[in-house]
Length: 394
Image (tube, rainbow, N blue to C red; front, side, top):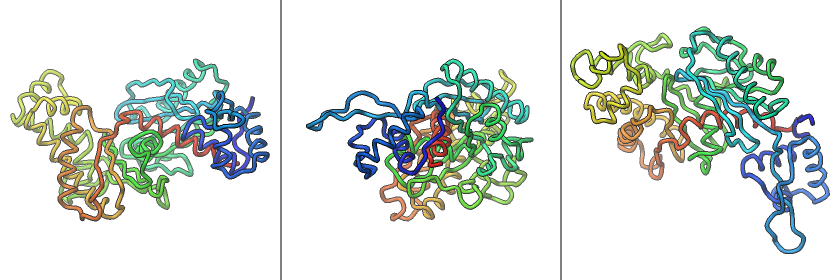
């Protein structure tokens, strides 16, 4: 049975409703779509013939003849890939974007795109084979990089040296024989929040992604906003100071140079060598290097120096958010990607800066919260990214 995709806008809307809300009755769906019964039945029959839709049992009785439930077909499976923070993550989801299987492993992006993308294809192939699938409905990819979405390529990515204009989308599509969509990880994680996280009830929100790369996904009017050239939300390289630390992009004083994981580690090493933190100094002596996990552990354990450097980074991030909140006026700000343990310290400092310095109109009822999806946001969002293409009218 070959899955092609919806043939018209009504079929596309039907698939997206089932993806977003789960199984629904025929009667309910026909009402929501505003279609006459005969037309609705014909559209469902065409989708069923492709394996895109199937019956999921009887619906609850509303009096009279009982309707049946419809759901996305069980053979509709999306692949998801996320590269970043030293890891390669791949997953398989169903048509409602529920994670069914996943695999993660350390990765060195400096090995180059051929090696990393090749490994992602290999892992997706294994997940597909284990699920007994002939092909995937589509694959979504999240990269810690500016991405030209129309071309499916990263553009001059500081966090991915050697990946400039590598055809990530076309390479995976050729290997797996299915549609592929690529976007930067902050956008993808915002989509994950919109589908299954704290952002679900909100049409306007900001998703701030921390980690090796710092970025921001904007959901405005219920849809991801990318800007004219897919560059919206690239806050990591806004300049905070002219004489600040050198950033991976080659400029100085960028947000990422102060707030990214590498910046936290750099400051932690300085504190350890200067004798300001016994905990960090002991860890540095034992391991020969520090990681952001070490910094988080020290801060969580109450180490004053580690807590200070986390607060300093959070305060600078808060200063950036003051401008974004005033400009965009989101309903909520969601923060994800922080190392385990430091979220509460970060959040308290960010809230203090934003609520103190923003206008009452912009922040009067605006929560600032940590993501509750954790590392699932990127995988769910990647599946959402490609499903938007697959579940669009041909």
